[in-house]
Image 1 (cartoon, one colour):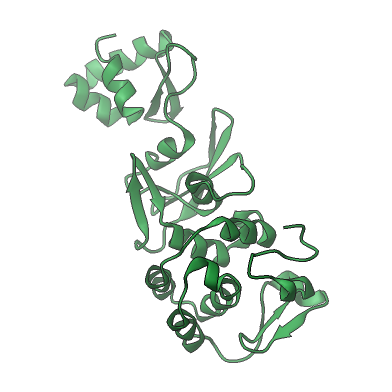
Image 2 (cartoon, helix red, strand yellow; image 1 turned 120 degrees about the horizontal axis):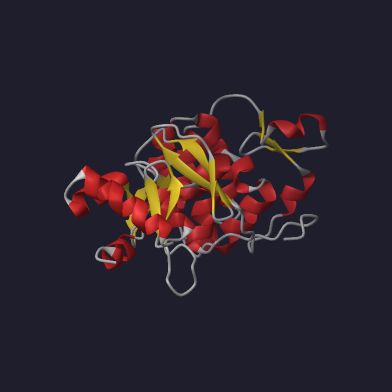
Length: 255
């Protein structure tokens, strides 16, 4: 039990952390064997471990802390980031983790950890030991990839729970992604929440200035469905979306 309190403080730790704690690889290996046998730690995946509570016999670190330790630049992203901030309508058992190095998905304590490619570095924060995409980046990433947010309906529900967004930080993420179609979608979707989120006309002007030419579908599944053209943003959207109110309610979507 010599090192147990230190492991509890770390929550989730690598084999390298244990070598630094014990002073040698041999001592670390001995600790791993002994503490796993006593139920004081559990293996999360290769060379990654979690401290176990003596009272509950459950892992001490939550899924967000664990996800942050999978790789040196790992961060909680996509719908999992909305869950971390408390702005998710649903709780998923998939934990989305962005990192530059790919890892195989794995299960631990009822959750499946899935890799997302970390393609740009802006909009990542560290909060209480958790690396997580900022709420602005989480919104932009969600608009880019509905399916990793649980679909468009879930994305809109999540956005509707957010009290405020920083337009400058949103634009920084859009600039880093360098996708004109994403600016188009972001402008269209976020304009419906403009007052509630505190976004200025300058933000939407910047989105419009970066739009590509021609008309696009908000998402490909609409191509064979009835749709309505939003002329300002040159997007074909479901008829229900034209009924978005300033409160983020969507007729027909049950939001």
